[in-house]
Image (cartoon, rainbow, N blue to C red; front, side):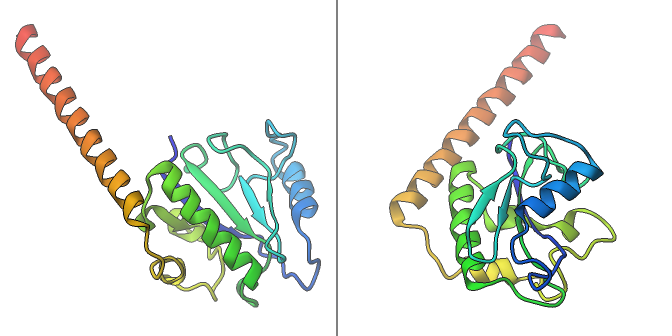
Length: 179
């Protein structure tokens, strides 16, 4: 079950090579040789090129090779570039923003469920020093969900809580019967 979204960067400047899809695919084939069901070796689910064009290495829910310990329950989105020396392009930002809202809606996630690679794995600075702690939060917060979407999410949360309460009651009843 998807419960996180993780933001990454390739760590290789766009100035060296503007398009990274094949470069990342070849590098990660040599490093892990972990072929996806889509036939690629890139360890991320998605890569956003400098133009904003998004390409997919792995299906959502398929095991990734992106962040140790978080490769089965997360969606990994990587942006091409080294954000220690350059910022994401406008195209990358717009695509990332759209994707994050779409994935949050699909998997009932919040801004609190979005992480940087460095948040989940020690000794990493991915997605780079120029991407501050609140960069994604500031990117997403100005946008407001339409009222009908908020209502749907609220109703689903209530339904989930009701089911959890029913399960807990059943467990308690089973304990009593087994005692």
